[in-house]
Image (cartoon, rainbow, N blue to C red):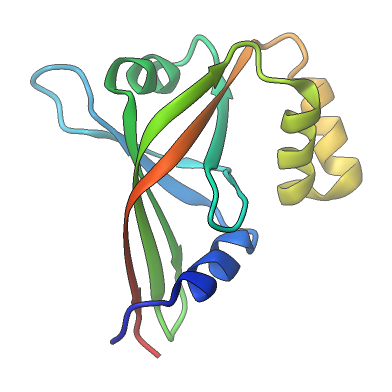
Length: 139
């Protein structure tokens, strides 16, 4: 097992993968964890879009920090863990950003259709500055 270089980590995070986001939860409950689509620019920030009225959005606003785990689920296993601080919140999330993220995961036609189908649901865009990285490559 070895750690990834910064360039390897950046390439991996640019691949289309679903991440698992964890955020501090309500008192007496464990951290909340949920699958998320994300956007990442090399050596940059992570962006996460979610429903503005969702529990996830409320918890992210409260905590101001999140952990994102992205993994390759087939051998050879590889994962990236990012702990970060929320540095910007856009409410409502810009439509062009929501479309770009949906197109990344669903393709041109599917992404645009998805955003259109969600046009009556308010969304918020969180920008997260990576503070710490943990990576492992089992190949």
